Every structure is written in structure tokens, then in C-alpha cells.
Image 1 (tube, rainbow, N blue to C red):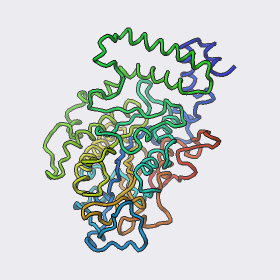
Image 2 (spheres, rainbow, N blue to C red):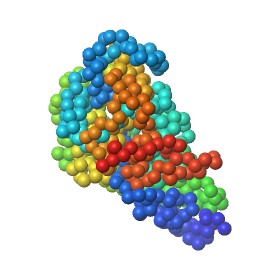
Image 3 (cartoon, rainbow, N blue to C red):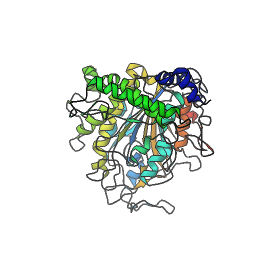
Image 4 (cartoon, helix red, strand yellow):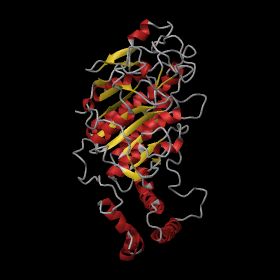
Length: 485
């Protein structure tokens, strides 16, 4: 007798599904992961959850936090890399100095540019990794590499792996939540948080804070006045009964399991989600911290971060409300793939114009998130990871822009066991490549380090797929001890 038939006959109908759910949470079913939140981790964790901030389009490390005096000195001179360079576009013009002034912040004296100055208040909590390298200068591939560990589709997002490995801390909310840019999706769209060959319930759930319908299809449409609460429940009960009967005759197919669980979760979310997204319950001091009190901006008029602060900081505050309610992984996106006028980080034409409002809004929201997590005690076991698919070249493109640079860029992280106030792996004098080209940092190393902080050995969290033991870090990755306190 297979597992489904046993559960169906012993538990009966929806009772069997409930029993399966209970056994699964206890790790007593053969197809549930061995890594569980009840102490069955590979080693003691320092963190329980992750907030990933993703800057879509390729944010310029050179204009934000990887200060290069040599670029200031050589500004306008012909760029000489000392080797042939393959540019994505024709971005090999003269050296281009940072488009904003830099100043030191914190006890660490970290140099930050004008738009990201709000991060100066929390910079001693942050570990910057300046020697990141990618495999490609193509947006779609670079983005997938950072979000899934592979530069081609068909692999689970990092949040899916965390959900699969650790399970839920709150039965009433998704384990993996995605807060996309309000203007549209980034390269690859939903593939960045798809569960691929993992059980389907581990895929990211997209939520749009501040919109009329933050979660699609959670409630009946207002136009359908004939849908009553009782009728809605009866319809869901009938669907559940039909799905359970169908699933019982198809062992090994997890798609209906995932659909049943999605219906169950949606019913629970009808109560939990509105509360999590209701920012009116936050005190005025917290809204002011995130810049959501609509007060006067201290930034120059040309940067004008009001719109970006409103949207990005709102998502950061929602992220804090979600993680404090038990969501394991929250992904916050800035930038979309919708072309012009450019509202992403792909600044080929004008870095100052494009990066200015995005960076200022991002910095206000990220700084507030870190400070707020610290205020509530959540930073101690919550990792905040700032990510982009690649950086920008130290040479100019069209005078004011910068081309793609997958050869060297910056990610940063803080909280959850991360050693703050450090800059790891310097880039070279131009910010073109790692200073030590034999020891770059790859996304596999960051993923391995984050899983390690969550109590997971990245080499042991595997799923057999197409005859291969697949994992987030593929066959690569090393934990970076210099980033761990």
C-alpha cells in the first residue's frame, strides 16, 4: 500500500490530508526534508530568517560604496584595463569618477556616497563583499544566478530552498514571500522565485503592499456580488474533496498536494495577511523612521527620492512585519524590466539620473529596516542580504553612463550572525575586478554562508532530480568565515 492510500484509508478524506500535514511537519514522511526547525539542523543556527533586497538591472558599486580615488584622479583619461575587455555594449569610454561625493561613516569609517548616506547610521552592522564576480553580463542569466544559483531557468529560488529545508514558523502565512517592484517584474519574472523541482508549495508568494489588491485572488472580486462567505466555503470544500480523491489515485505527484495546501493556506491568510499588511497599526515614530510620514526630504531636489522611498521603504516595513510573524524568507525588489523611462538600475545612459532616486529610496528603506530589526531584537537572528546581478564598469558609456560589469561588483549583508563593520575582498584600484583575481567571491559562497548561518550544511541539503543530487550551490561554494561573528 502506498503512502497516499494508507493515509486516505486510515484518516479518511480531509482527515487524511490533515494527518499527512502533521506527519510532514514532524519529518516522519519519506519525502519530507531531513532539516527541520525542531532541532534537526546540521549545526546550531545563528539565524532563523532572511530578507533579501534585490536591485534589478545592475547597481553601480563604484557610485555607491566601493570608493576608488584612482578614478577621481584619472577622470576623463582614456581607460586602460591592461587587458582586452569584452563589454556588453560600447561602454569602454574614458575613466568615469563617482558621480557623487563620498564621505566616511561609522566607527569603521566606511566610505558611502551621498544618495546612500542614510545607511551611514547602520553601516557598522554591515559586511560589504567587494570582490563578487558573475558568469555573464546578460541580465536574465545574471539575475537567475543570484536568485537560484544557476544562470539558466529550471532551478528553485534560494527562498524555496530555505522554505524546503527549514519549514514554516507560521501556518497562517507563506514561508517565502516576494515583494516585487510595483511597476513590473525584473528579468525572468516569476522564474526568480519558482520552486522548479522542489514541492510546489515552496515557491514564493507575490504580494504588492500599498495596492488595492496586495494578494491576487485571496478574496472574491467586488464585482461578484453573488459570492457569499458560505458559498465560497462550500465551493472550496467541494474542490478539496475532489482534489483529495484525485490525488489518492496518483502517488508521487505533488502538484495536487501543493494545490490543496494553497487552498488551505489561502483560507488562513484571509485573516492573517490583512493584519500583517496593515501599516496603520505602526506608531508614528516607526513610520517616520521609514520616511512614510511624508515629511520634508533632506536630499537635493535632483535626487527626489520621495516616490522611491514611498514604495521601497513601505516594502521594507512590510518585510519586518512579515518576518516578525514567522515568514522565513522575504525578497524585496527594486527595478523592473519594462524599458523606458528607465526605472531600474541599468544605467547605460546616465548614472546620476537613474541611480539617484532609486539609491536614495533604497537606502532610506534599508537603513530603516536594519535599525527597526535591531530595535525589536530581530536583527540578532535575521539576515539582511543586499544583492544585484552585476555592477557597472569604471569606464564611461556615452559620457554619463556605465556598462555592465560582471567581473567585479558588491553585495552586502548584516544581522543573523554576520560580522558588521567589515569590508571583505577588495576590488582592484579601478573597481573592475577583484584585487586578488585568484580568490574571488561567487554567489555560491554567499549562499553557502547564509545556509550555514541558518544551521544548514549547503552540501547536505540536496534533492535527487534527473539522476543528480541537486543543491542550491551546485558543485561549488565555500562558507566565508571572515563574515561570521
